[in-house]
Image (cartoon, rainbow, N blue to C red; front, side, top):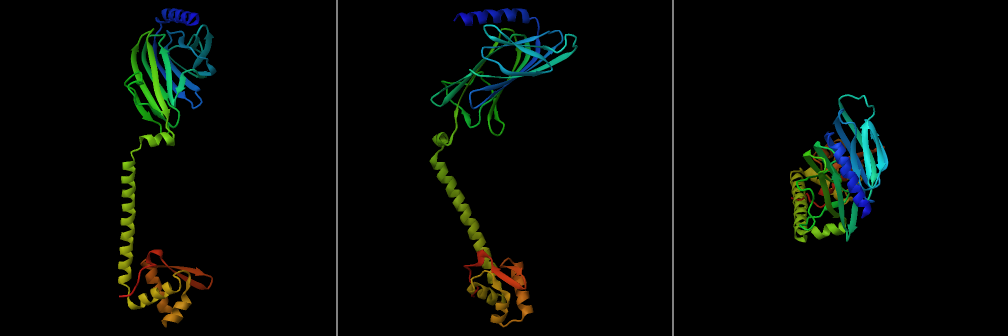
Length: 301
């Protein structure tokens, strides 16, 4: 208890000395990992009149990297991230990015997870943008007992994960943005809880009907094609069917039909053009195969 009181007093002290220095924009992107670690990226935009900016965090700050300036962690009763320009002589707008890892923001109970983080505003800030990315295969809990905070979030997805976004204007030093997000694992077992079997049956019936209609249409088309064959073409097709309908030697068709080689060749080319047979040359032999959709059709009139 003493630790939190001291941290509160120190935070109030920082607010009192930093409120005279304003920040144009603060962007926070919070990436929640599956192992309860959290990656945080902070982007501060401020003018040269602000010598340094502060960010308070009651959790450990690990693997700190930064660009556009210099950032360091000051350990008091709470951790304070302090960022400043890389040079005290810098003039104009300053943009400092800080990236770090932390944990302690997540609690899980009975498959439901709570993410909580109170973001303190230690400076008057014209604009604050917050982005939170949930882990993969997670869904928001829709419950009045566990409301999303703050309200009014823009909820979207990056294709794999749920992404929540907030935008705030005119935040004052001492304000707090209370983040509360409740989510649960969306594994296959949990998905079944939300599936109405009635709609599954309807969907399967529609798919089956579609397959039947397509097959029926193809079958009718095959029958139409065979019905317009002339007598010589029907004779050749019947012979191919009797010989197993696959890899039939063209020379056997010539010898059994009594037609000349040239006539059989013309008949087969005509049948191939209409999609009834396929022709394949293997060495000095021509092999003829009846297409599958014509196997059960008859050419008898």
